[in-house]
Structure formats: C-alpha cells, structure tokens
Image (cartoon, one colour):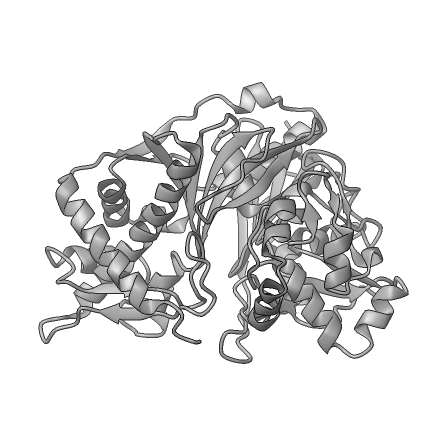
Length: 493
C-alpha cells in the first residue's frame, strides 16, 4: 500500500502527516520553533530551524505511521506564505533571518510605493494591494540592508524563496530552485495574468530576476529528495497553506468557500479560471495550477485569528491553555459591552490599515477576565463577517454554508457564534488536517494517483452549526464591532 507524506510548515510549528490514498491520517510529527521579535512590529524566523524541525517532523510522521519509507509514494508541501528567505546559491546558508509574513518593517516602503502611484499597477497585475504583508518588499529590504546582498544577487550568487522554495531547495540538495503559482502570486512581484515575474515591479524594487525561483504547476514534478531522507522521493505537489486548505476541502468549483482559523484567518472563495478583481478590498490570488493553467480565488486575509487566544494565554495569563477559553467565555451570558480589536499587526482585509493597533473598549468596573475571553473569541467571528460581507458584495452570490478548518474550530462557542454572526451554516469537517490533506491530494494528482473529479466529491462533516441568534441582535453586535474597529485605525500615524 502506498502513502502520501504532507509537509505542513506553519507560522509556529513544522508538521508532517502521512495519509493513505483515501485521505486518512496514519502518522503525524510536529515540532514548534522559536519566534523572534527583534523590534516592535518585526517578526523573524531562523530558516535553518524551520528546515530542521520540518525534517524531524517528517521522520517522526513516518515512524508513528508504522510504515517503511519505501511505502511513501510522494511528498506534498504546504507552507506559511509570504515569509521570505534569501540564501547563498552554493553553500545554502541564509544571508539573513527569514522575514515573517506578519512583519511590518517594510510599511514605510509600501507608503512610498503608494505615494508614487503604484497602487493601481500592483492591483491590476498581481491581484494584491500594496502592503508589508507580501514578500516583494521584504526581499527588497533584505537586499538593501544585508551587506553586499544586492551585488551578490545581481551576480547570481543568491536565491530567494518563500518557505516552499526553501524546503524544496533543502530537500533536493540544492538541485531545484522552484515555487508554484499559488506562492508566487503572494510575492507582489508575479503577474497573475501573464503567469510570469513582472519586470517593471522588479525594476522598481531593484530585485534582480536571477534571484527568483522557477514557477512550476502546483501538481507537478519538483524534483527528487537527496540524502536527507532514507530513500529518494518525488515532490509532486506544492501550494501555499490557504490554497492547500481550499483544495483539501474539495472547493474545486466557483462559488465554494472556506475559512481557516489558524494564527490568522483566511477566507477564500474559488472563482474559476478567470481572475475576479475585487471592488471591496479583497485579494485576487491564484488558487493552484493542476497543469491546465491557473485557477483563481478571492481572498480575505485576517492577520490575527487564533493568535489572539495565544495572547490571552501567554501575554495576559488569563487562561492555562487555549481550550480553556471556551468555558471561560461561556461563563458569562454576553460580552458585557466589551469589544477587542486584535490589530496587533495592523488590519488586513477589507481595511488594509498597516497602522491600526489593538484596542479593548467598553470596559467598566464590572468587566472581568471572562468578558475579555469572550470578546477575543467574538473578534475572530466579527473579522470573518467583515471579509465575507466584502466577498459576497464582489461575487454577488450569497453563501449558505461556510466550510471551516484550523485549530480554533475545536472551540464550540466560537463556531456557534460564527454561525450566529454570519447568519449561515458553518460546516466543520471530520478531518481536522485539511491543509495538509490538500498538499497530499495535490501530490497525488501530480503523481497521477488521483483525479480532480475524485477529489471534488463531498466529504462528510462532523458538525454543522446553524444560526440560532436573532438577526437583529447579531446585526447590533456587529455594528458595535464596526465602531470599535474605527477607533483602532491609523493609531501609529
């Protein structure tokens, strides 16, 4: 029997999951790694630690599956997107720490680009907005602030990549420098219409083309692993984590949507083979390319989702673990008028405010820790409504069911409140590992073991949360949320 090995390199941990060809989990490995915050608003990772924890996780996953390496058919990779690594083409040594997608250090450069009138060109060509979130300005920053980096890049001595590219390079022993369209489309350097790196954007940011990876179909061949694993395995599927989750949910038809509740929240709607340009502050992104050209999605990116629960636990000490947030929130009948806007890294869609900052408002002498916990969970649901309202305004199609995944979906209070605030059903799948499943399924398609039609079949769900709250009550809660958001905006200006 053959199995697929999915490498799921996330923002806070590296995971690896072994799936059988029916999509069942048979083995798992996971390692957390260090988060570095050298200055306010800056976030970094050690690229070598990402690689080492991913490699250990892969070995652990196969060991816990109780199978031999010879039974693994192929590897699929899914990754935190936008996080930027630059390394030496010969030695493989990183020239600087990885700049994480959450990092705000390039906000001034983004302001400069906007002032120069680049916003429309960036939006039209890349489907993105000008924001420090994306890889292009991070790469420009590394080249500008690392001694001799730009000159070395021009001589072809350096490689750039998002985390998928870094892992492919390491897995293949430096033989393959490649990415897929879903990750390339998150760089702010890739023209999603011509399917090529954009020379004008590269010139403005002084990024030499030779530093960039080759773009290959998401379901295709990315080389064979070198001596880092006991056997040589083909890498046949690659996609950014949110696109992989969309694929894992089987959202293969236009109008199907999912929301992933991870460190951030990412709501994607499949829009077909034609890019759909948003009028409501959403991103147009490439979902994947199965070999017959790119398919597209509308995306709303929420920077702080489940991370706000980690903040309650680690920074405030209000809860011993993330799971305790549910009971604490349910211990009070409502939020007591308290709203928490978790704009710790600015606000993403549909606001795109790099200078917003976190806010708690509505405090009274009667406010307790339970109200804060409830406000934090509610904030995740409110932000999702922000994005879904924009998405429905663009697409003109009401959504009856939102498919969900990610760690925070285990919180029953959050899922029920999400259904209440949206006024639609929330469907949580029986399998929690949807993102990794998407990578495994892409690898299976790339290897010719599965077809698109097979993967598009509806999967059973463990729970469906239906709205119970009166619409007038839900709308009033949401209006107060919008008032709180306005008070958090442009704080750093």
